Image (cartoon, rainbow, N blue to C red):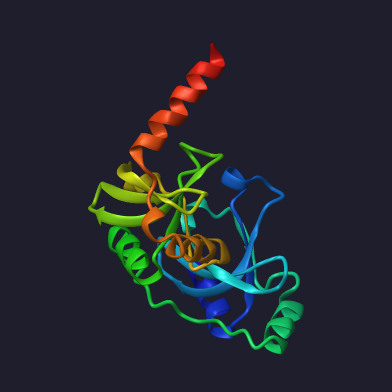
Length: 202
């Protein structure tokens, strides 16, 4: 598989990657291979509107199949060329997962982390403030673009997918930057909201 991924990278072709056990047989990822090693592959994603939309890191052990080139490779490459969009190497190192998370957080501001085997229907978005060989500590941002007051610790090798530099992460950072003093959630707000829910349940 690694040899084929390297071929796709050198030929600048779109690949289509399947992870049937995690995503099901009808889901896939289209993207350009930016880098790969024996454990991970880094893709620059091509979204449904045929635009480059951030990066994704997948683990080779989770990949059930992939197509090189992708079914609409020629069309996708032509549209991207007409739009002047080019593949850009984010220059992150795949050799150490903990270092990778810190580098992404520092360079891009946010990282989206999926732990699909333990939390299949959700993900965490934030910046990794500490990581070692076993765990990582994440300062999370909510869907309202406010940082949580507390950080949260997770097991490093529960991660099954990493995304960064996409339109949604950019939107969260843009909105958060505009909030000024309101960029963080307040613990008192959490308690008030919890009290309201308890009263409604009575």
